[in-house]
Image 1 (tube, rainbow, N blue to C red):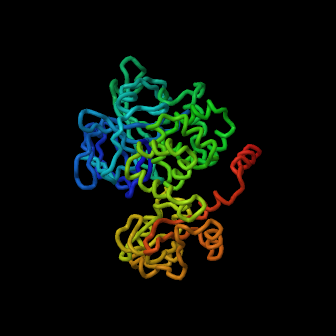
Image 2 (tube, one colour; image 1 turned 45 degrees about the horizontal axis):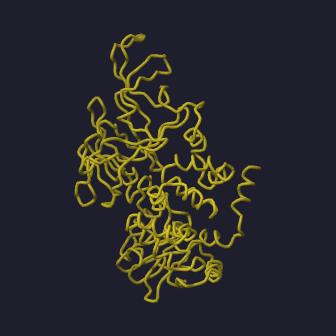
Image 3 (cartoon, rainbow, N blue to C red; image 1 turned 180 degrees about the horizontal axis):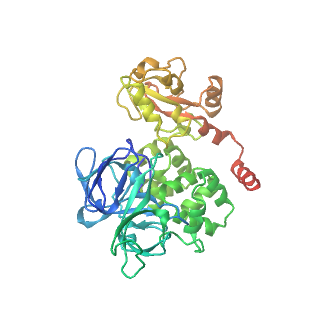
Length: 449
């Protein structure tokens, strides 16, 4: 998927082979990376083939309440005609002193516009006067460093500052440059007394999408619209996937068409298809036209099937590997934090091509079996060929029985030529077999808990 404003994980873990601190030293770290933002300014951005995309002009972050470090959302990249676009941080695979490399050559070319709750590091935070909490001294911000967490997310956690003339220097020289942690200064973070969606979002930032959807269910329509406007595309997409059809249609209808298309791109294709299926045909087609063609294609394919069949339920983006892939490669792929537990439980082995519809489907490799094999083993040696896939016209009751009969968490879907089209996971089935209004009941239980 390729949303305009998201934080999706890329195909590789972001790494840095050399980031310079304000003092000029070079840090070479492959995990737990620290990158000073000022050193990124002007760096060329390349796609995986080495073609120039543009140059970094700033880093987009989301400030949070209190002393919590800001979350990095992505890069503002200047392309031809001096136009800036947004590149999600999850699309970045490599940052070094000479360049930034992306995981994909396809990026959204929509013009970057800063949204509520977003802050530009170089334009808005550098040169700001802040206060050292330990001494009460004022300092001027020289630079800020973003660091990668074990989850793959990036946070701004270190600040390079210079003492401001006229403050109490104690035992330190005037103009001294220091590096301090984000929570050692005040003057950046959102005020806890400020009103508005940004404050509420910061309070609920750590909620799971399903829980945030429950909270929004209890808000007025006006307040829900304010929250939706302030959420970034991926977060809003995650929340929409947990809402009832009525609330999805209401929120999507309150967005400008281009923003609505961005959010649909950030959703799983099967969820986006379900939502578009609730809209009038003309409105759905208008939004599909605004989506990137690579994102709209899988959604259009799903809309061709009835929503109570395997084809309408499936996701066209399961984990797919060739038979000569190793167990180590397979385990690395299913570690992707964006995969649901059901989709991460197995990989599908096929002949080329390796994007749906693929070449001939060969079988399924279950992660528990892979854990018992040497990492260098070929995935073809652990493929399960005993369980049959289903066809896209298989009705929902039959899909449910198939999953239950074989104790599966997901089942592959193939066409008449045995090409893999996608996979139906148990959570897709549950969404359709649970009674209407179950999400509202969940919200009531959450409030009581």
